[in-house]
Amino acid sequence: METKEQIFELEIGGTAYETRGTDKFSRRKVYRAPDPHAIRCVIPGVIRSIAVRRGARVRAGEPLLVLEAMKMENDIVAPRDGIVRAVNVSPGDTVAKGAILVELE
Image (spheres, rainbow, N blue to C red):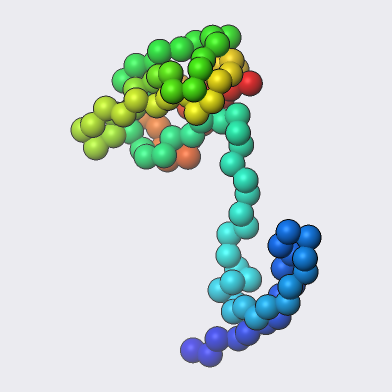
């Protein structure tokens, strides 16, 4: 199987660069910056308990909920100070990787 090279233009820090890439590079998944307001599930599991509700003020490091995954209980904590905009899960819910668990303002 022959790999076909292409020339790509990239912009990094305001400077344009020309580089070579393969077909695989051109089919890559486009990077999207994570939403700073969404707290996502990093591993599939089951919600065991929820420690906050909509409108609650939280500080960085405060527990938001407990996620059971692979027979271990994981405390999901607030990554920053904020106000809980929404809690998108309930105890007993099975959640997939990438699901939005809690949203902060």
